[in-house]
Image 1 (cartoon, rainbow, N blue to C red):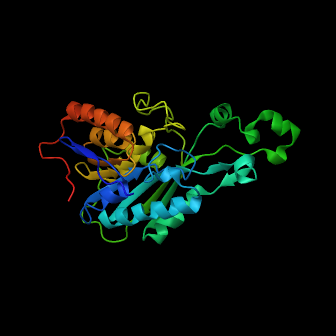
Image 2 (cartoon, rainbow, N blue to C red):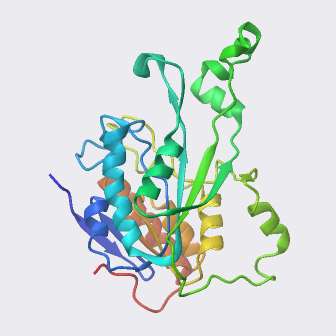
Image 3 (cartoon, rainbow, N blue to C red):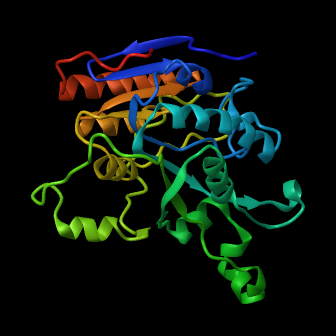
Length: 298
């Protein structure tokens, strides 16, 4: 059964929808979004709900990509020509008990190929540095243990980075994104133009405790605000509309409002949606950026 919009909330500069992103995005007009920033479900690694529309419930990687591609086609249609989408992801560990071998699954490559098949052009691939010590402490991964290095380093590996994959919809951008030197000094550009972002604060995220439910199978891990803000500043103008089709607790929306952008978010899980609306309302009231109505669906 396809889940469409269950409920919605609107503020001065945001619109939030509780429902299946594929169905909700189908209601938006062509070329109505200037930038999208989001972290998709990581195939079947994290399960957020028991809904059939939850992409995290995919039985296989192929099933996930098939479902994800429906969303990518809608996203391509509603993105303004010459504008971009920024997708946060990581590769995934292969587990002996689940996959029959120990290694790394190329999820980032699967996401790139899915975007290209939907018409997007790969624009940039940014590696986000993460501490291997933190990963080792959290996951106890055999390949990161020092004792494994001493025992047999043939099984030792480097830590797993995050990526920001940026794709462009080909065409002429009708509203060029310009930056003034006083607002965007060359030193910042030299740092952000690096293919590796070394200074993303991994702990600067929205609080997730209010949205978590006892039945949650895995964990909710919101996207770092540093990543969202860099994408929004680099690839959108103040007043532009930023979309997240996997809104979660509203991290992309809060960052968008802080930076004087409008925001549209879609979230399937009711508890996450409700927390996102609380976060968006708080930021909307605090900034009071716009006098015009927020974005509306077609």
